[in-house]
Length: 381
Image (tube, rainbow, N blue to C red; front, side, top):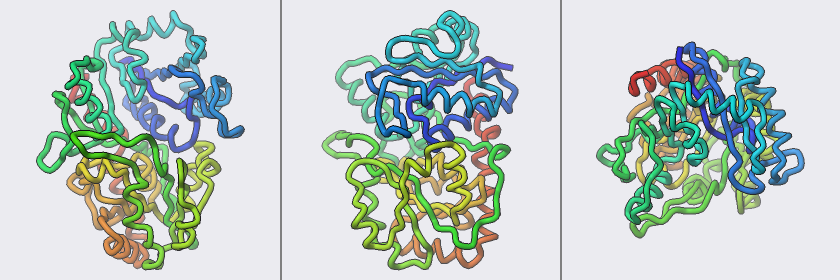
């Protein structure tokens, strides 16, 4: 049994879909028999989102309460340390978490921006997991060209499965990238019969963050790619619904083309509401970030993995993931409206078959114990 610390963000943004991403790693590592801890730090003023009041604040009490309740389901509520903007420690005390870092076998950095690297200096192995392939590597390469030092880890992983391979235009920034798909705990999420009136749904951010300019080209978000599929509801028998957050979501335009719209914060206000929304869906339709698509990154969504695990087929814009995951039954990679319509027709003609295939893909290719054990083997743990 190894002692493993996972650093990421849940307390600062305690919404269901975001928490689900981290939870898969925590439960998966525990199922493999390891002792797992979760750590998080607020580095900037006003980083904590309170979805009930719809405000950004320094007060982490809402997020702490939600995350503790979620971690209690997997008996981890006493193995959390959150440091707020004022430097106050919540959960494990400062001396306790520093001792844990010194005795730990592995520190996994999943979006802490290096906040825990000082504490992790004595940890045996430190790894970085990139969830935004393209954006991360381009920023790293630009820093490298400016002569700036990059944060140092023993191993670097990315969800961009095609990094370093022919056809993928993401720079490596001089790093040997190992790859993994974000896992889903198939023992935690069980398949459910699809409702007869379910829609194909998507939980998304219209603009997650600013565009990145690299070597004279700009790389952006889903708002750039979505116009390719804007008229899709007019051409398919499938009912399509978006729970779209972010800046400048063109709700009137979307409604005019036949998209059903849901409040994204209501859908994801808790882990349970997120799972219930997926279960109530016929499947998922997902447009991907422009950066993932145009670089042929091979990226695949952690939310899509949840849909598959629950027996919901996925129709997802091609990023190059079809090189790694079987497509055509339960999972479809599409480039345009015509291919998306064909995928929906296929699913609607035999929904039970595609539900079964979706679950099988999750079990065989995305299961937490399979992916995480393989990744641990790669780093000698």
